Image (cartoon, rainbow, N blue to C red; front, side, top):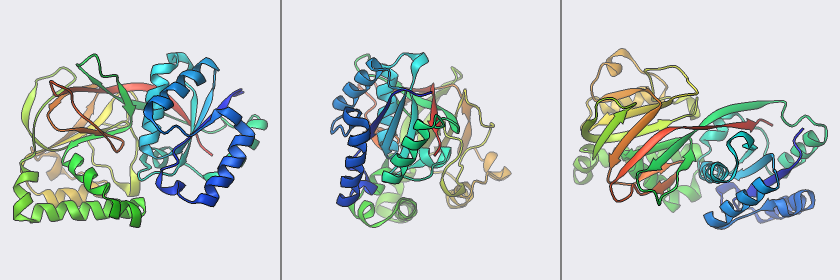
Length: 326
């Protein structure tokens, strides 16, 4: 039986903007969890709470936020908890992106979710349905930069697309699925414009090494990697390996890729036809470790991270987390 439960809420998440719902949520959460209901406004405060929760043997953490918040919580847990005492997580998806919640499956959110969690906990039935996922870990060669955990990372055109998706107009006026669609349209418009087409298509200078194999040095138009097992709306832009908890999936698209529109149409529908698999512009597979050298920022679950003074980062499969499904 889970003994101690805590709650981390991101009050700035897109679906947490309703003042009345927030007041009702806070009243219930505070009455039930007391000081273990926390709304940290900085990463440092969140990490301090993880250290406190580890000391108090908190065995389950409810996370009310989007992918970025979940990534920060997993990172804090990774640095605060012993590897054999990682707490279970319950996700209440309320962010701009909720890929993690959609992959593992989720039900209700808000006060209704808290009421359900409390009842299940009291009846000792909270962990009846659990999904397991390994985190994606990013590390730097610079020892002053600590490792981060998440589940979906990207670089090159992915970074530019995220910048478009974070445009306040899109965030304010479109729900997540629409925001993704609008972002794709804007990105394709960039490719049609003579002023930005070459800038996007030539990609970023990049070196990639999969599982200590030969180093590949070439410009990358798009790079993405994940430890998730599914994405929204049937999208799955990966091939070359079945779901494997011990490996991450990756896709690297070279500069000036051929048949880009046709490839996008196929991959967004979860298709990888033979012509695409045989096209050298598109490389996909599974790996335990990926070494990457790139000057521009890398994205982890919607958050930007610089690549350090030597611009080298390492992607690998991180610890396993257990997610409680409501």
